[in-house]
Length: 368
Image (tube, rainbow, N blue to C red; front, side, top):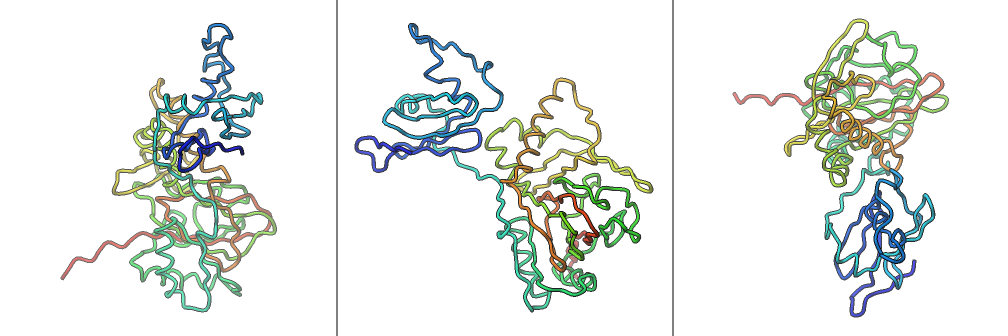
């Protein structure tokens, strides 16, 4: 990148490329410009005699991306991906027309799994719980790496007891107290759902069709698949805040429009109406489950806008840059906040076995 600093400036101007916009840092100020705004104002798309614009924004592709962006002697230089056009914007012109100055930058959801990991070591399970709670508060989830465990299934009750000491209680659902997520399951009720198959399960939250979905889930790896079966985790709270910083209208639709979640199985049926996101300053709750989302009953003139908002959120969290992907080995444990985090898995082959237990906080004991 060629960088040229203005006379007398303490540092030369620079440019950062983000999803959907670029940030020009110039003279100690940060100025953000949408890619569409920049391309709509391309210096090339003007009549050579009158200088008037000859291209409408409606003529541009729906999705725009840049190959390179750099600061040169002439200003901001952008090479566009779809037609390799080179556009140049003088820095003085950008300062004059800036519409987002010193805007706070919200980071997209993280993807580095080391942010979630704890090593179990030789300490008792109970000794790990404070670190588990701290990691869930920080990142929404924790992966406890166990090392070598001969019979992980023998430790399930010990994990329940250890977490129970942290004022958590097991929540029994229509599957039972403990789920054995395996294709040959014979222990649980209502196994006619994706979790008991070898199919991929995309990012989602559990039990969104309940009035009060369980707050936490523990997933304990008992047996690894022959191939596939990687776990996926996405911080929906970080994703929503990021989307909010880019598209306020889309975020408001996700927060205010009630939709229906409906689960119907052989011996269970439940439905609830709720927005995809609750974010009221005191609590954050996400309900996102494509396989239990009922057909939407929205006004005709709001349906397209709703789908655009929802699709943008889902594509954001499904982007590999914005979610964690990792393998759980036998004995490893994943604990996550089901009100904040989406989870899923890739398709697999073989006798993969993961145990699931839901938890909620115990109600505080009234003083005697």
